[in-house]
Image (cartoon, rainbow, N blue to C red; front, side):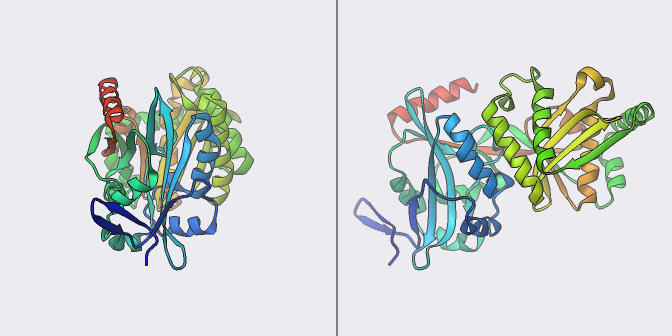
Length: 359
């Protein structure tokens, strides 16, 4: 008989799975690596990303792990992991998906071969019972592709957020795709600036790995200093997090760090993740004091797209944020969603306060 059951009124609800909280869960274990490969989770649920998030980001955000696992009872085979945290904000116990300001997309890690079996269970009721006390639940940001997966575990009204992410599909011929996708005026502007810059300096756009990739994260931090209010990377623990991800992930091919130099002098750098042919751009920094007239960000993004295509990539995701420059590269907006669900009167008041704050 399955090991997980809860009582709902007079009905005993039994699950096919052994569901529990494992707050010392090892995201670097072979079990989790295997599960991730069988899932449709995003690059932000990669084993090293979640391991470092719980090691470096969570403690500094006063967030405690709430890691919910589901296993098949007989062999204890891992079939889903819900990475979450709980923290107290203004006296309110906030249970949320583990993004903590660094993960652009939240997703459950689910064995896609087990989804039909999960639909037979009353998982939201069981999971809420397993979690226990909290005041308000918040899952965000959620891509439309993972809405149905989250709803397997948490019921409620999933609402569209007031911001989007932006992505584009790169054609089979980069040159033809670029000519068709970029606005003609914009394309000519980039080409003109690139030619001018190349006449005045020897430009080099290169991919970095290992320690060089980690050091480029520090370069990005310095180049961004004072440019963005509340920029997370200016905090030492966030810098340490990105450095570790860059060093480890670049050696395994799913982290991509690039830098642009002119006569050996740093112009700018980019940091991103990838999974299944999709590149997610996360951080960029450029020396606008010295090279601003050459639109370094535009040159780097254009070079990145070409590089990604040459290496077999098909989709470039500019991720969260509605900055106008993304449209110039022909991106399309992607809707994002959240579930914000109070559990009690305290949570209800907190939800109203959040709604007022976000207006």
